[in-house]
Image (cartoon, rainbow, N blue to C red):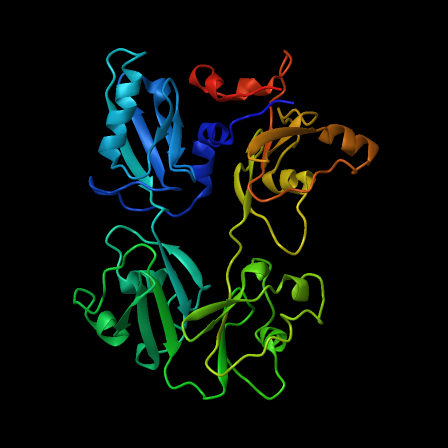
Amino acid sequence: MRWITLGALVALFGVFLAGASSGQTKPAPGDYVLGPDDVIEVSVLNHEDLNKLLVVLPDGKIIFPDVGEIMAAGKTPKQLAADIQKGLEKVRNNVSVAVLVKEIHSRKVRVIGAVRGSAGAYDLKQGGKLIDIIAQAGGLVTKPSRVSAKLIRNGTQIINLDLVEALAHPDGPANVPLEPDDLIILDEAEPSRNQVNVMGEVGKQGAYELDPGVDLAAIIVQAGGPTDKAALSKAYVLRDKKEIPVNLYPVFAESKLTDPAASFKLKPGDVVVIPPIETRYAVMGQVGHPGYYVLPERKPVTVMDALNLAGAGGQGSLADMRRVGVIRTVNGKPTVTEVNVEQMLKTHDLSKNVALQPNDIVYVPAKSSHAFNWLDILYPLSIFSTLTRF
């Protein structure tokens, strides 16, 4: 078995990860500061082989050929380009580097309340304002005059919002410029004194009467139940501006109706929020649809499931289904576990059909006339310094 630097692998396939995202943004200004999950395009004059589309990794770094790991988060595109150029000048001649921000994903604003979409985090585009983020969340469920809105900034500052004025005069001060990590709370005005709101990944968002004896599970059932995209273990009740965690996984995934979360007692004015799943896995290599996929909470996803979803192994495929690899971090170190999918299909023995975990990467190598080595998928120069063998 070989240890492989996970950051290096993701950077190698940055073009696939970027392609899986659909949130295109306008070009960022020169003073924009990069952050994790941002997608950048690096162009190197006179060296087309170095032109790359990369995703800034969760630790804020990128991996670039001939240079290795570079910290990108906290720098402007111009500063990052200068760092890359400085590294390349040690091994290449006549280089000029430019960095362009293709997609912005490191700036998020949370929205909960009376919107048609799901409660959760939304990308904050450069210069984004109040009505922009409401539009991203699907718009309001009712007239602006019936919505009471507040903005919570830095966890302490509360700003009252005037949605009617903001929509009537988008260029005016009521259309507040937003900042990363802002929280927007949208409540329907004049609700019943005995109502609770259910938001997020349920069949039907909205306000529900809190009748005597009705508990949390019953309210969610009234709201159509959780969707397949519901992060049940991350659900919470917003009460007096405080988030109370309620793990609904045992209730709706394991049918444990005696679990304490099922009988959680709600109070009038509570907001029940079931956020969308954020855990993902990736499928790379010789597949029809490489990229990120949501890892559901309520049912396991196996290697076979992932390959079917990503369109691997079709007729005329170049995929080597005998050496499919599952890359997973164990005890802080990334490992590779090979799965012989071809043999499983022939023998109908699915005992080695590995169940995926959050952040796993399923990699399907190409068929080759020579013996495949996992080192072959990494950059041949600077990347070898990041490998450890046992």
